[in-house]
Length: 305
Ligand code: SER
Image (cartoon, rainbow, N blue to C red):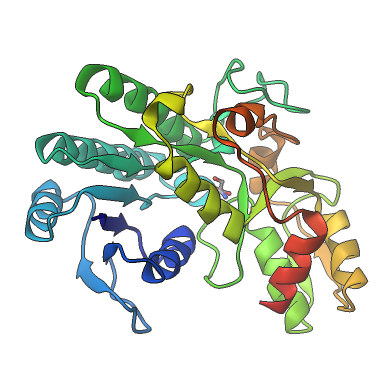
């Protein structure tokens, strides 16, 4: 039986993974650094992912065999204190890896990001393995994690599986300090008939994925035989690309009005170093990745969620 531990369970991805696993027969232990505001339908423990002893204790106490390690400081927040960002993202990765090796954890899911690329990566359409020089500490930590995943698999057969998520669109949680947050913020503003102050240029295009596809793809990747996995770091994955201007058009098309002003801030520089489009053919070929939601349906669904 799957006995799953999730870190960062109250975040954007965590929240959706918890809902998904609650519908299955798997045992689920949700953990986060803070207490949930609403009741969640599974066991919950407070966990600071920097506390290796506590991870060890929980894995042992709840007989965990699968971990979804989602806790992280995202791109824009990471730039406020890069040292802190490295510490949280990397020390937690190491803690999870060490405890997992000790307890023979079967599989780990760990999200990487489009932040691993950089201006050297041919951003019009990034391939799986271009030259990478991330522009943010977040991207540096994600690329380092990918290299560690590859290393631990070869050295210890530790099975870490990973996807390079583009911007994840979900209106269920408050955006958490990322560069792609504007999509969620603008959709939420449209729903409340509020004006929106956009921090990216109207034509800045970035790749996106709808939350249900983000979850489905991870579940699929976690369910396949390891031998089907040809990428030992992290798979490129995407659904569609969108700019603020295009998003306004989509919002209008769905019958919502929104007035947007542009106040470009430091996140523009981050977005300029990220891909416009992504080649995810490896994920398609290796394990049949296919998004259910495209541009139209993702925005429509988010407006109605
Ligand atoms: N959505 C994330 C961010 O903007 C990308 O991984 O930081």
